[in-house]
Amino acid sequence: MRIRLFISLLSAATILLPLIIYLVKPQKAIPGRRWLFYFLLWSLFWECFFGITAYHKIHNLAGFYPYFLGEYLILFFLFSEVLGRKTFKLDFWNISAGLIVIFLVVNPFLIQSWKQYNSYGGALANVAILYYSFRYYFKTYEEEKILLLNRDSVFLIISSLFFFFANSFMATLTYNLAVESYLPIGYHLHFFKVFANAVKNFVLAYALWINRK
Image (cartoon, rainbow, N blue to C red; front, side):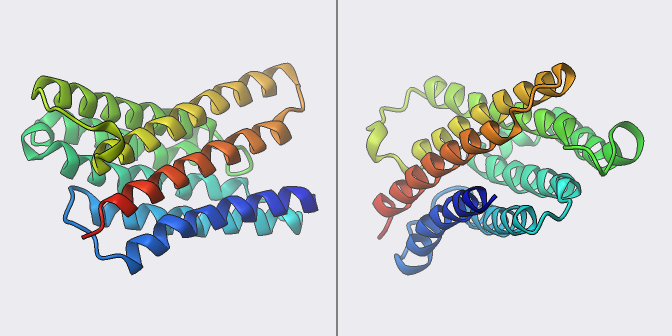
């Protein structure tokens, strides 16, 4: 358990790197920059919460319900600025986002339980964020932008989110299958997600570093 706490806090510590760069280095104005900051703060809080409660053997699965809800809302607004109002002005975006939020809110009351891991809500939010990422890639290709991929901050930010949530989605699916098969692999999935989180944060830190004024 101490090892798991250490790994969780280490994962939380990697979030500090892009946060510090954001605060210390003056940043150029890029779409969704403030929402990225909110996302980092939100992630840091919940990483610490889950790590500390797990160490003290406090039931913390209920925390995944507000965690996924807040995370999805923050990233929805981030992508709305990255993709632009022309894309997000469509009723489809607003209606689909509203339905996702409604599902995330009612899920612990009507479908799953506060004592269960929020696998349904997490999977749905992950798929939505992956879809937004694909929309960004398609928009970039459609506009025929020539990118130096390792020097474009927005591309790196979206790619880091895509990598993390693709891993998170696969981990959620694996968790569901493990529960149905009574396989005790939750511990291993935790380290898998921590690794993906660390990679995401290092890429975000690099993206913010090259975006400095």
